[in-house]
Image 1: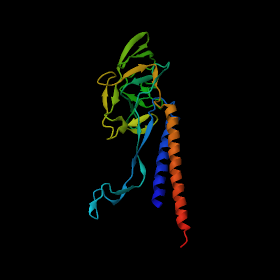
Image 2 (image 1 turned 90 degrees about the vertical axis):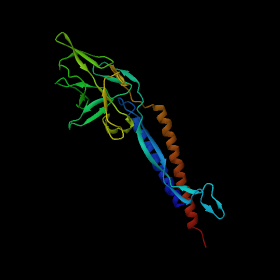
Image 3 (image 1 turned 60 degrees about the horizontal axis):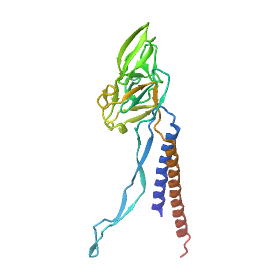
Image 4 (image 1 turned 45 degrees about the vertical axis):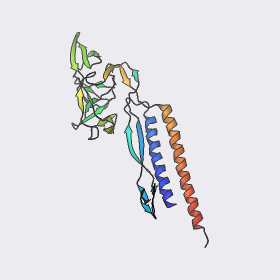
Amino acid sequence: MNRTLWIAASGMEAQQTRVDTIANNMANVSTTAYKKGIAQFQDMLYETFARPGSQSSNSYLPAGIQMGTGVMTATVSKYFGQGSLVSSSSDLDLAIEGEGFFQVQMTDGTSTYTRAGNLHMDAQGKVVTGEGYTIVGFPTLNAKATNITITTDGTVSYTYDGATTEAGRIQLARFPNPEGLSYEGYNLYSATEGSGNAETGYPGASSFGYLAQHYLENSNVEIVKEMVDMIAAQRAYELNSKSVKTAEEMLRTVVNLKV
């Protein structure tokens, strides 16, 4: 009975993690380029009373006796499927169609990565994120540039003082395992041993995605699916709570036994 309480409690905790993950997805349904989180679980260690194949009297047990001890969260990973694109009017709004990230330089010099392409230009002509972090691999523009044009392969040109200038090409980064990236908030990711090292290249080259100017990538959260998953998680939580109640009633019965 005590085992049942702990097993059921682990189930409730796991479903709470699932609900928290779904709630975060739903909260970020309108966040540019947000990638949905997925909670995944695994069973915990087993308590072995008799191993499969062990001898019992003159025979061998075909299956053995092993009791599970509950469930635990294995990972809360990101699903990097493509989000839909929504049009915008800003020349520096960019969506990545396919694989790749924009490279971001933090104030301490470290590198992070993002797919959120709602970019801006600072007073020095550098292209930055909404928080002011510099986009690495983006050509520096004239601070008074107009009619900024960005092609699907990342070629950037602009107009200044009546003349058109080609500034260069945007570079993207990609990873062997994007799910291994560490989530830093503000739509930023950092590389880890799990993600592998960043490989840089131009849009459209060597399996890199293409750029779409005047578009932003939506969150890839499907709100209806999240609502269905939320209901399923709630039901699973309720079932585990009933196991707790059943174990409690059985324990009460034992306590009330009269010799």
